[in-house]
Length: 84
Image (cartoon, rainbow, N blue to C red):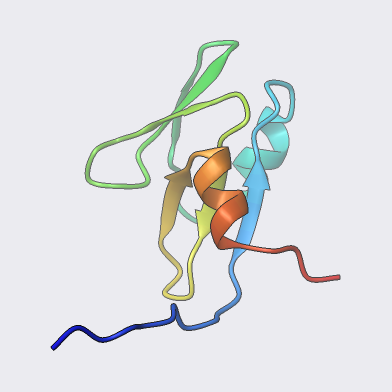
């Protein structure tokens, strides 16, 4: 039987990398020492098993478990809404 499910709402912290806010991303990941390399147009992060690269426009998300991950803008904006 097919059922319909809704994603549970939870809050996350996130920062969007804009190509210039390297210091802000470093501060956001401060407890993890995850930033390996700044290439000028991307950051190399050891925040997941895959050691992802964060490109301009991507979001770095700290989830409800305290784990960091990279999220593409279209996925982030369709999944999360800003809380004011």
